[in-house]
Length: 231
Image (cartoon, rainbow, N blue to C red):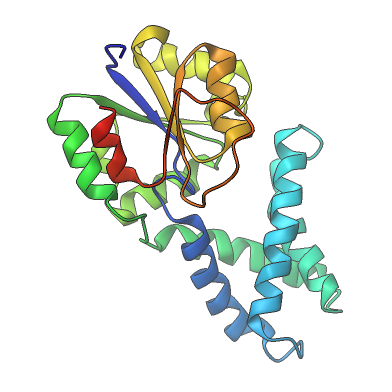
């Protein structure tokens, strides 16, 4: 095993439970803003939102659309599925969603325990995320995760996106880390694992949902506590 010193975590879906927090946020917005405008129940609305969000994130990561288009069009397309053609409402909901979402605090089981374990072993912990700078900072602060991480590297600050090699090079430079002493930990095979492979960095695939492997990560775990067996 290599002598790792710098651990680079993904945030959403890896340690901060994005799906749980997003669902809670959307449920609040649905009750306040949409329940009277559509006959649909919340669950099908939420499922269509997830569908459009995933599709538009892929387009954003591929460089086909910009940040602002991503933010409001995922809501716009969801509303259209339920015959609510209101662009102003879509943009308002998008703004409110991004205001409320980072106030939520749900993290995956064993998150704080494993972060304390890693800090006690003197690892330097950082984050590499494709999320928006302000939103990610608020998530960290409100969930109590901010005290564990030395550096936050975002796609906005680096002007690059995982899996591009440039965001990893930027992270290494910002943290004064070398490839051979670094380890990337994330839930997304295409962004986190392939991105780290592109940069020559070892990887831990955090496979919370038992996803079939399409790559060969250096390590794979199914829950965060398993990191104690690696580090």
